[in-house]
Length: 103
Image (tube, rainbow, N blue to C red; front, side, top):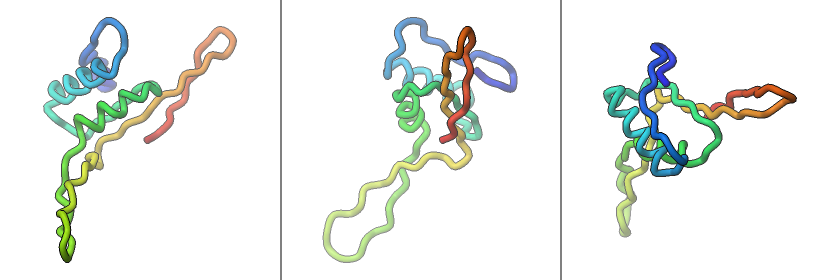
């Protein structure tokens, strides 16, 4: 959901899977024009973070090392202006409380 406009960017009905997480993140990237100055949030479902890293990380060439041996593989780096936070929900009596866990 886009917090500025309260616009729902993408939904996949059905069971939540790693594939669905990846599809949602790809669609969000597409619909936001590839912008990285975003705040992405999710619950603590691990495939969400993996999908965000897979879609938004870019490969950066490593400096060449001196001497013989294989060249270093490129390193995957997340954009510095992209913010990702997880939300931890806990039940207390009849309500649900939450707190943000920054990443």
